[in-house]
Length: 220
Image (cartoon, rainbow, N blue to C red):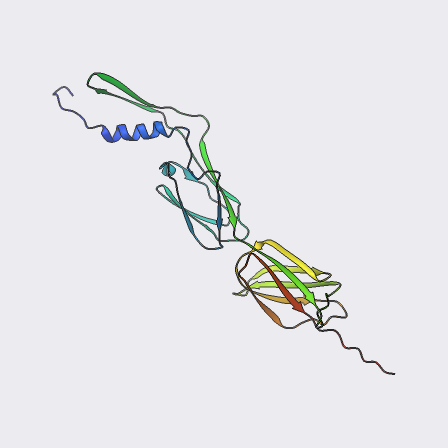
C-alpha cells in the first residue's frame, strides 16, 4: 500500500493455487462402483479434496448427503438409479502478487463444458431359486403363482411364476426375511394356505416349496 503496509493475501493465493492445480480434475472416486446393502449408508471421501466444488444431482431411490469432501450414499428403494453424478463450472479470475525479485501470476480459466464425476451404484442382492415339489420329492409340473412379502407385510414381488418346478429371481432381492404365499396352482396340486418364511443371507440360495396332491376317491 502507499503507507508501506502489506496485505496478507496468503489465503487467497492458496485458494487460487488449489483451484489452478485442480483445473480439469474430477473427484477421485469417479468411475468406481459402490456396492451397498439396502438402507445401509456408506461414506466415500474424495482424496483430491475438491468434492466440495461439485453439486450433486438428485437420484431416484437414493439418498445422498454431501458434506465438504465426503459424501454419504444410501440406497432406499430396490427401484433405484444405477449411478449418481455431480458437476461444477469453472470460474474466471486472476491475481497478481509481488514477491521480492520476481512476479508470479495465478490465473483460473473458464471452461465451456462443466467438469463432472460419476459414481456407479450396485445393490447387494441375493439370487433366489424356488423349487416346487410334491410330498414325495418329485418336481412339480405345470404353472404355479406366488407372492413375496417383506417382514413388514409389504409386497415385494406380486407374481412369481414357477414353471415346471423352478423359478429364478436374480439381482433383485436383498438379504433379509421374507414371506412366500401361494396364490394359485393347477391340478393335481392343492393350493397351500400356509405362508412360508424365508431368511435370505447367502448370495445364492434355494428354497423348496412342497404342495400336497389332490386326493382321488376310487369306487370299484
